[in-house]
Image (cartoon, rainbow, N blue to C red; front, side, top):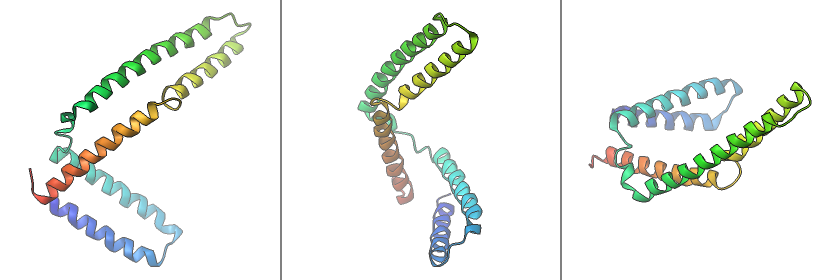
Length: 145
């Protein structure tokens, strides 16, 4: 599995060197397929080598996930309450109620992950996950355990 991964990296470097000289619009579908192939290979390596093992040894990650999960859960419940309250508020017609519901749903879903600090929590935890996977991959390729 390791040799296949290293050979695919060599093939990609050769391909990229050749493509630096000349780029064509018709190469885009090939690049998309090549990217998809490497994505599938990477998932197989992650699954077969169990690169996620040891991620939960970072105790502060668990604490942040529990706190963030609690905050997101509370905000989700409050948002659902506001959403249903807006539906049951006295609207003059069914069309106005549907428009109000759509507007409230858009505000709720947009505010859940895009507004506030949730995006930063996701970025920080994603960075820790990527660091862990890279470290485990380097250990795997180097033959360490």
